[in-house]
Amino acid sequence: MIARALWIVSPGHAALRTAPLAAPGPGEVLVETLHSGVSRGTESLVFRGGVPLSLAEQMRCPFQEGDFPGPVKYGYCSVGRIAGGAGAIGQAVFCLHPHQDRYVVPASAVTPIPDGVPPARAVLAANLETALNATWDARVGPGDRVAVVGGGVVGCLVGWLVAQIPGCAVTLVDINPRRAAVAAALGMSFAAPEAAAGGQDIVFHTSGAPAGLRTALGLAGREAEVIELSWYGTQAVSLPLGARFHPYRLSIRSSQVGTIPPHRQPRWDFRRRLSVVLGLLADPVLDTLIDSSGLFSALPADLARLSEAGGDVLCHRVDYQGVS
Image (tube, rainbow, N blue to C red):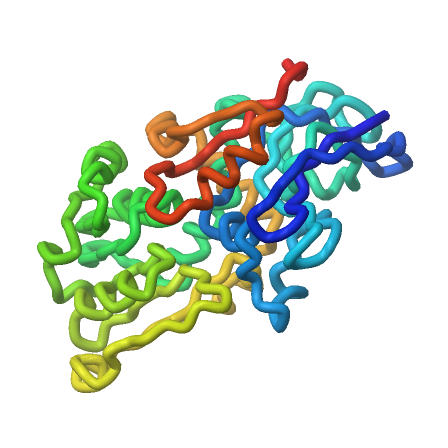
């Protein structure tokens, strides 16, 4: 067998490469890819060569090949069907795997997609894991006033989760007024940064921009916490810690999907979390977030376009030819 995969050859340049693929051995499955998703924030950083060498090992994704800044095969939102090996033939599965048209992995690396979840929507699973982990870190409770600064996929998913908690009032804050319609569809109100109300009980920051984190600090109420989900790579961040940060006793907490919050670790592992996330994807309203798609053959050019600053795309889905 031959497999095609997306490689970032060097910063700002990607290409599809072919390589032989061995047949599955004992305990392995062959997956024929249906769709993959571009996790725009992280993958744009990788595409531009912005991963700090000091964090290269921590930034490695499952089944990555090569090293940063390149050549490197990267990605972690893959959906396919089992086509051979130890699994149930035809079963739709999710896998944390780079963009590739077919691959062989241990059977333990794939998670079945529930019957009520379309495979095309399941490309949101990795981002929804990040969002769920952040809500756990924040310990949001009924009735809380919550702001989410940054209307990308992760921010929208955080807001969607929190908006389902009874009594929670959630505001999506973004500089792009077109995010207002997305916020409404997901059960949130919307505000531009200059119009957002302060005094929030919890503020999530997901914009990836230092200005967004400064906005988040400005919206936090006394003794409130800002949950920081953004990944800045080598970019330095300047914050107004001499303003209201100290008198209001504000906190900034990092949330990162690679670690389950300590208060849940005795009962939760990654497999349980992913299984729950895949079940949550049964809600068709989440199709709102998949607003771009393209063929796998066009992915090198599409990734370059998606990595440009100021882009308006939420989630870009990659569709693979010749797979039904």
